[in-house]
Amino acid sequence: MEKRLVTRYATQSAAAADENQKRIEGVFEELSQSKPDDVSYIVLRLADDSFLHVSFHNHRDDETNPISSTAAFAHFQDGHESRREGAVNQQTATLVGSYISEIG
Image 1 (cartoon, helix red, strand yellow):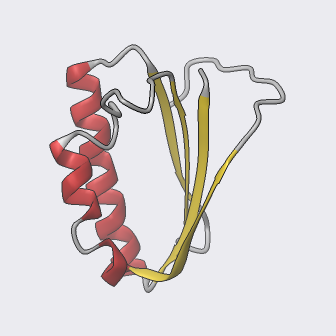
Image 2 (cartoon, rainbow, N blue to C red; image 1 turned 30 degrees about the vertical axis):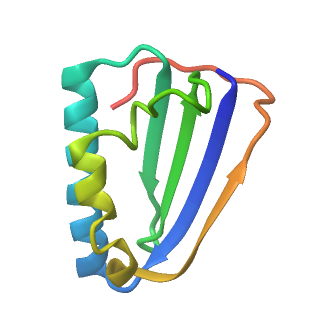
Image 3 (cartoon, rainbow, N blue to C red; image 1 turned 90 degrees about the horizontal axis):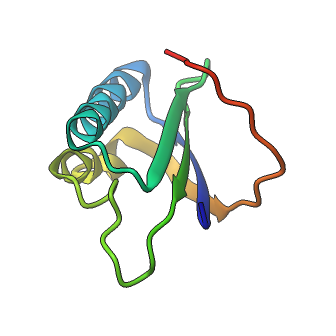
């Protein structure tokens, strides 16, 4: 995978975090139905109700992003700033290593 993004942000409250999680779960549901083969995506809700998204993409800049092009991701983005506290911290990342087994 050529593109690696790590995104972190805080939410305004537990209720906002619950709504955010519900919308993210919708993204995963849509991805599980469409099954794109050029992306890996994991989202963690941390104990302080902040979120950490880690995505690996293997599409060119002129190709459609298999995550952000979903209807569920558009729904997740809708009103995101009202659920969030502060700015989004998004950075590219270099993969140092990985080991992935079945998680859930």
